[in-house]
Image 1 (tube, rainbow, N blue to C red):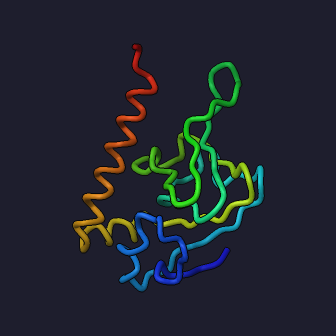
Image 2 (image 1 turned 60 degrees about the vertical axis):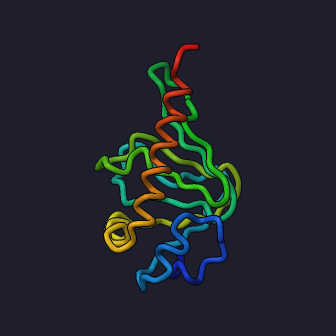
Image 3 (image 1 turned 120 degrees about the horizontal axis):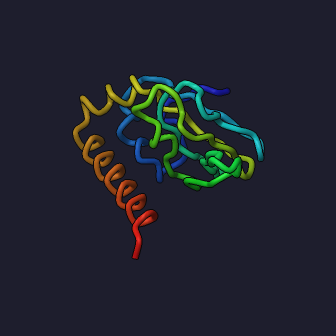
Length: 141
């Protein structure tokens, strides 16, 4: 695990890059080998994750004991957001290729939203878009 500030990050697609770059807070960075889990169902939620490079899948085990993919993300995208308000993860996340990710802990994110209304608005749109995707996925047409 490395620790960097957002200003050091080379990922310009990250939603948080410019919002958190003014903060001296350190962000945890992880390199994850292919097929290794980032987190597992029932582990404590620490914050939101951003894929710096690579790709991650979120999944759960259904009632029949089969793995169901709930979300796939690639470079620059956020994951872990479906569990953000929970105390424990509802899903598991696994690297589907060698990946580099960062964790923005809840307190850092909440602090940033308080001082940066633009970030708060971007997050509202992000969560709204994710809710719309979920609604479309499960709607009967």
